Length: 369
Image (cartoon, rainbow, N blue to C red):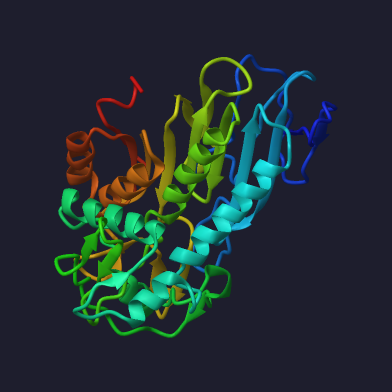
């Protein structure tokens, strides 16, 4: 795969063949993002505990020498971020997008003691806590997902994540360690109150929130739409397991996203054609570690407080917004094959569930999206 970068007003095409790239792609008549989620990811194919997987996503686009496209890749939110901006080749939008992602991470991270989320946790109790728009919005969306997924998506799993050993950024997590005490089920969002009008959030004492379940998706939504709102023709933003496109691609009228097979990175499940939409992957095959004899992963079943083990390895989901696709995908993974398909169908999210047995289960609207 080749990466095409146009810097500022320079219309020279700079093709950088990365050491990890596999092959070369020629010209296309429409833009191609190598995504989503794990699509185009540089990872090992084995997924046992003790294997460190890189969260690397690559965006590729083929352009002519007359088109202005900026591509930028950097580390953010514990993974690799990719930006592609169409129609504005100045560096200002890249700088804005990079700063915006950093600002969102500083707001939502559970790993930064001075983040707004951590400060909110220290003030948990009966009183509303004045909060930023970004915090109110993220928690409001997370609580809404809790309600519509019947608690299968739950932002109150932070204590369970910590108890399982995921208590720091994943690069610092010990991949093998002693057994841990069983965690309790997540407390749920009954006592979490979001007042959008007053810009305040109330979290009950003893409840700790984790926004990792939708943080990357929501950041991708905000950055992609923000880039277009500031004058770019189009944008593609990939963060960890989530890809969001907005506006026009470099070619044609739609973005073309190859979807990597969650069980075999050398294969694809096909190509999703997106117009102002998102496609995401949630999987138990990455971010794994061992505690005693138990293999852990980061997708917690709120009903048990332990890593989900309902027969689903991964969910690929497509929706209008990445935060929604991400949250519903995680809920479907927690629910299991049958209940997960029912949930996705009820909420109108096109998806593929991959079972632990290697079988693929498609929603009825997957083929038509």
